[in-house]
Image (cartoon, rainbow, N blue to C red; front, side, top):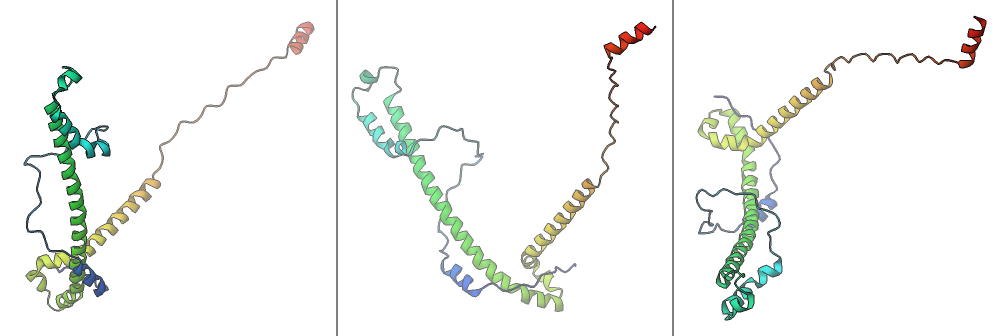
Length: 208
């Protein structure tokens, strides 16, 4: 089996690991809600976002509509049903509340995920040198810890792929730059313009 080469490196600052560890909260006991099965995101049309004031006072507007006793007389039959408008406002406001909570939750989870990985990568980075030391003396250690070897060697493999990509791109650019351009058709010389002097023409006629 081919041994994985793991690059030696400078250990992560222990103080950074300690700070990250102290800032990590315990995982929530319940999973966050997920979209319904089969849900597919679709592009949202522009120009349909409410103003902040509309979101804030939507519940009060709905209460006024539900309490109105002369809605039809005041707004005629052309107005939509009062209860339907009130329900729509309440539902829209409820989804706005959910969106606000989800956005705050997303920021919190993003921050905790960052801190957790800072801690995890700091500890695993400090394992690279001992793992490499052991691998040089016992290559079979990779067979016993194949996923761990792949995990520890991932940054070096990514750097290797990046260097290979940049090298190939330089070759392509050099090849394109040195390519011979297609031959161009020669430009025909401009037509000769003959200017006739009327005085000289008349003199020639008299001599003849």
